[in-house]
Length: 397
Image 1 (tube, rainbow, N blue to C red):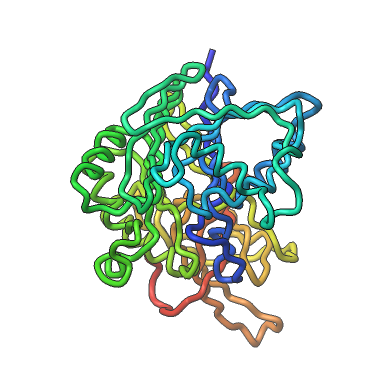
Image 2: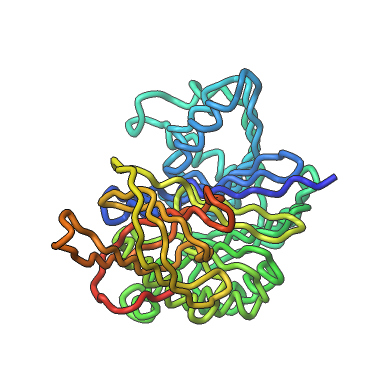
């Protein structure tokens, strides 16, 4: 019998503070929160940023009267990693049970994590107190280098280089291995070595890529974060199979993150940029990345031909005629024989005409956000979002 895969879902990918600007919507504006479901069904939550609220709503909707149990790994106590705690509905239901793990802060002393948890609902910062949270809570104090087992998933914690302390986590499931190493600044020898050991031969490395290499070397040096370039170096050195750029800066627009992703893929092709709703499945068949549904605007059903150019999943350039199934000002649904890579750029050239004698060419730059089987044999249904086009030249991957 085929084993169930491990599944990782991104509920918050932004660093420092949430964002609501329109030019950050595609990657998302919630602060860090990830959900991992191990092959045996055991639930893990990585960090409690504002993405925790939407995860809680999803868990509650799927609950069907049974209790929720999850193991929550907190990397550190900065606001962007704990802001979601008061807004996680399952904490307010007595049938639920949660196991928390993090380190003892030298600024707080023993029971640091419990102190941080309860402080989120203390006066005068929140209108109700922690006694309203009736779910069972157990707090476990851990340290860098510690390893433990939860229902067959091996968890390893390691110290990272970040102001006031931070832990990175590795979770080895029967489906594959995931390393979550956000909020780390390279340059501290011991922490650099810790990270290389933690990430060695991992299927997926989720890594802090908040700044550009230029920012990291100048005005953001010492702030406790990293860049896409450092992520690439670590992924190569540790022989990682997939690199996920994470903890996007609140001032980084979707266009900025696109640029980081494009640059990283030139050096390490198996790179992705974390976005809200993105999911990763790990099994004996390998790693599969999927994006959330992105149909947000009113669409018109139609059928016409466009010329699409881009790169396939194995890096080969392609150009083909595609059938456009529907279109909006934000994106389109295409029927293609080629299977372009998720988060790669395409050029979509459409010959549009409202009168036979007045044809015009519409050339659009797009990014791939969705796949599904096509309606016809040997076709792929490809969802794209149109993006700003500063340069009308050929697409870049």
